[in-house]
Image (tube, rainbow, N blue to C red; front, side):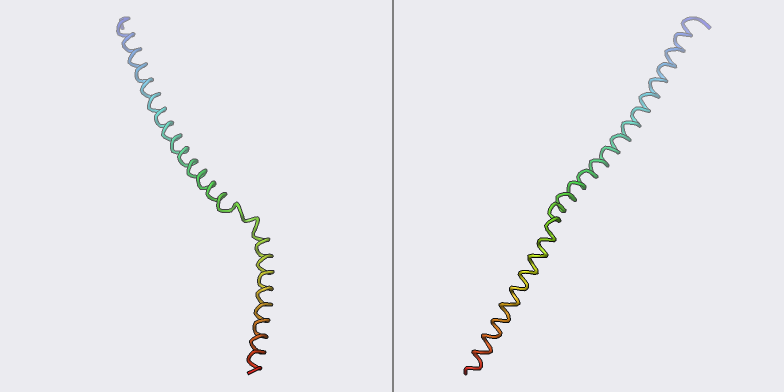
Length: 91
């Protein structure tokens, strides 16, 4: 085989190696982009969950205050029932 033929064979093999490398890098890049888009979606969902649950620590205090409010409302109801009964008894 002549020197020119060896050079052309070497250049052809180098071109094949380069094309395979580009192909593998493209496949790798697509996989990385897919993973990145999935992680972005997970990040956005996590932020939404954090926003939706940011005030859950106040639920206990809300329950306590609602119980106090309910007790007070029942006192007012009893007072009004008593006042209406007395007003009805005066007729």
